[in-house]
Image (tube, helix red, strand yellow):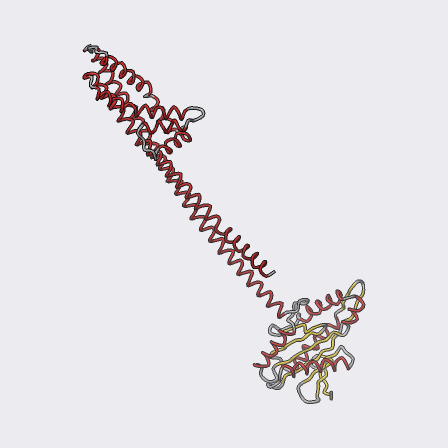
Length: 437
């Protein structure tokens, strides 16, 4: 059982930790994904820029070597022309493969490799074309790229025609050579125009992508920082709330430990602790103790039930506090017994207070279910005249005075002033009669 409980607690603790760190993990993963995506896009754009340089240079070389071959008929120059022309044709073949439906990825890979692109760049070239060909800058670059297709075809046809003529032993007509050479120069110019546009569009797109991705990374980083601040603040608030709840719980428990649950008055434990504290510091003759016992409580409990008895105790507790001095303590000691500690109070003032309480209770009527009960109390007062009086002795004297008040007919105040075998009996404020116990 203990092992299952420990395992359950560990599971809850792990779950709590996961909940705490999950927002940060999500943002970090998002940040890493965006960073990876940014690197992939920039790497693919860089590959296109590098491929464009090779594509443009190869087109120029093809025109150059074909023009030389036109004038000289040297086979080596024609071979160089073919090798140069194979680069843009390979790129063209790759583009066609990617524009098919469905896309022919393998043919595109072969075409890009023929175009002289690095094998590590080919997957990025294919990925960028497939999924971002509708992005404005790439769409415009592809248009410039496709615009050279007729020129490549024308250049290829020129090469085959010129080779067939040289291999057939035909002498080139000077005027015709001049026309072809002029057309090759025009093709070179057109190739250059499209290549520049292609390069410019890629450069502009690369800068735009870099700016966009930088902004996204900044926004993500700021979001992470804000999330960290929010989460930290939430943790601080949770900790403060927990500490406040813990403090409130401690206060509640401390209150419960020192107060009566029904009336809210101090309980016997707090009463005796306070009395001991007063006995330790109070000058002789300046401390008085009152014990009060209700006379009709059992009748109310027996005839109306415990709920009525509880209601009576609550009403009596409020009545006892009405004339209480700020530094006096009123407590419920148990059952229908109440106690009052009166610091800095002379014996006659204590008797006066006790008598006022007796008369207030005598004038009080408890009503329950159309029944009314008169309420009186037997009150014992102990005047602490000796600074060496112990708590047990003080409580015993007050209890004995309260018991005598009950013996002598209830609804009265009985006072013990500390003299052996002598008590003061008071029936009205500041009026006492000496007598033997």
